Length: 177
View: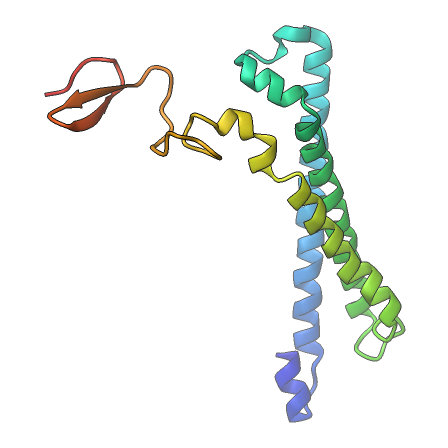
């Protein structure tokens, strides 16, 4: 709306306000996400401190994955990328709030630093610590990354029943007719 109004020589304030409201909503929802993430991290931390090794009843593969450097790197990269995207969004709200002729809008150095660099770093850390690399051991053999088994992931209670050259899955381990 702002672009069309600008080309037509009319007031662009409505379009600007919509853009600012959208970015402000993004900042608000990211702030809620950060708050929920911090609450979850705190609860996991206190549960682990209280219960020790029994805090998470999971397989050995899940324990090894959770304690690996790659998994901790994934958590750090998620935190870093969230903060960088939040920072970028706050900058964009401040930039647009000053208007198209405002002081921040004309600062190319701030735009490059708070727009381009933030997104490049966020993408970089998420690619270095990609979930497919961090969860590789859990996904091997379950139809995931570098797995010989390309079928669906089955729970431990499901079995594959061979019938006339076809495979059927039974939840209770009994053959189906």
